[in-house]
Length: 355
Ligand code: HPA
Ligand code: ZN
Image 1: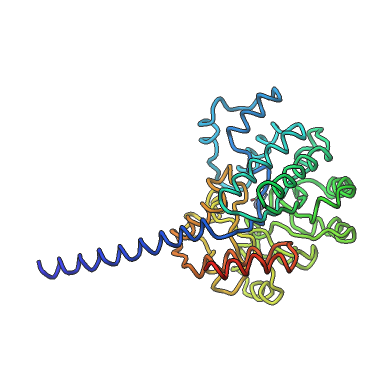
Image 2: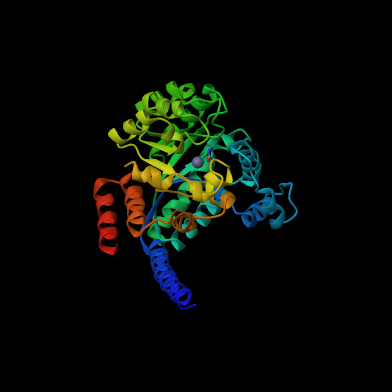
């Protein structure tokens, strides 16, 4: 009896200590300045805004309520998500709609203490419906200028090609981007991965690089490590988006380390799309322990259950991330960003001061 009481006391003390430390780490996650490098602006379309825009633009959507939308967000793979995501994007019609969408994301970023964002947009999702490229980019750009002034958040814009569409469509999209070079820092590759290898877009990416765009690509989310090799060797990417399947290939891990190629990991997205069964099974910590430059991002927060802080907090709890892990993740995000070296240093110095 005495022994068991003694034991349970010890247990209580341990629990107290642990819970104190966890809450301290969570506070740190909330207050530390952060950068987000993997965010699809169309994936930040919250159900409430979807309804509002559908009404404003007199567009029929196949849902009767916000609750009905939320129950539809049960995905079994990337494609099952994309089918709903492209459906949702149909409510976006005017420049004001793209402004409102982006502004709403930037307000959420402010709440999370995100001070720098690199935003993906998918022009073909809109131009294929007859929406003008210029209107899309101008709406997004107007919102990021306002956020720079009013919220103190800096942003870059990355234009993604849809890999399920053909090379000709990507070339046409690149052409449309040329008059907006001042607003777009780079090009990326997204949408259905398996069956659409990066090699399909080698010529488009070459042209984009000649025009001065930086390159990134989604690879190794559902697709095999070979797609990551192709993104590195053929598309000359500065970062791999997702990349979680790299651990299946030791030589690839070495290459990513040698070339210091960051992985923009999206943990809640990976669980929602069944890349990992549970967050506890996610390989984020393994990636860090291998010495890879990984960081946490929200991908499509309106569809996957949370913005950047929620991703970090849920990862902390599921994977027992330490203060040092969190510090590394947030430093990695600034280090991997397309900010100038001076700007990177400014934020990293602040993090070092805080943590
Ligand atoms: N993967 C590929 N394409 C996408 C994603 C993603 O996670 N989100 C939006 N488009
Ligand atoms: Zn993505």
